[in-house]
Picture 1 (cartoon, rainbow, N blue to C red):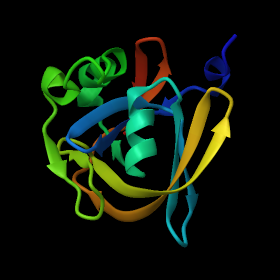
Picture 2: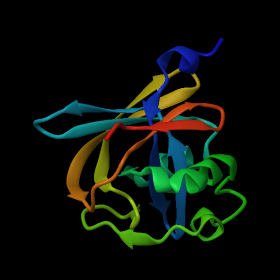
Picture 3: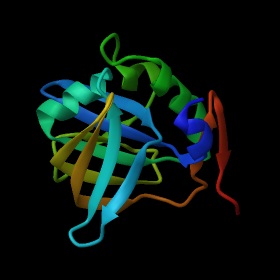
Picture 4: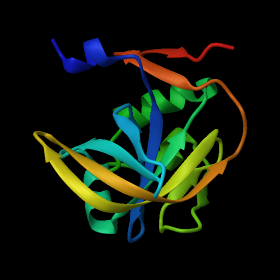
Length: 158
């Protein structure tokens, strides 16, 4: 049995990052706020993921909170590798430019956090990237998507 069978449902996000001229987006359900002052947020990324390499090199990432209407895009972002394609183009996600870090955000997100990596914690086959939130933006309201496992999701209640 996997730990996610017990821990889910967990809110799903789209994590965006960049190193040099390569942008990437990945689906992620392991993330959490850590501190109000200063605002800190953590994401947990597998060491085999392309985004892991980009975050290790760039020392920044964007947490994009997404709504239920992006379920198809979330599944695609979780099944394609940025090593092999431009996931933004393949999936059809429009990106904007963050103001405080060198990374994109997703224009159709509900909100996003611009994070600068301040610590990395190795945890077996994953790394916890601790980010100081340099900027946060709420774009719109909407039902957030929660990951159940496999290709299954649920949403927040009305």
